[in-house]
Length: 84
Image (cartoon, rainbow, N blue to C red; front, side):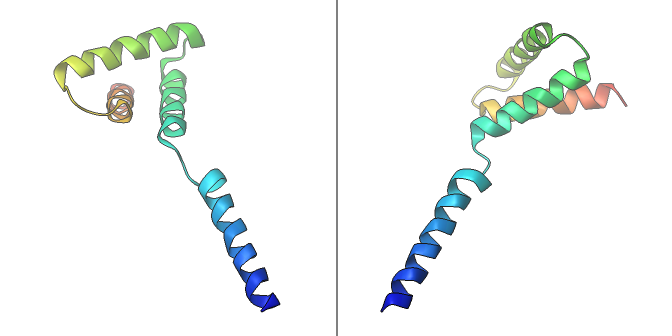
């Protein structure tokens, strides 16, 4: 019985850790996409953010109804394509 309680506690702790630390949340992924865009733009962070926001707005007009992550991914794809 004691072993069962210990196993349940361990499984719960592992599940909690994976849920909070191991998972990539949408906001965290958006942050990483923005950072990759900033690197490609080679501008000061504030200026790069303004450019990224304009590019995202342009994509929202061209492709309405997508997620913010989708727009950032598309902007990053276009920036990478331009640098090839």
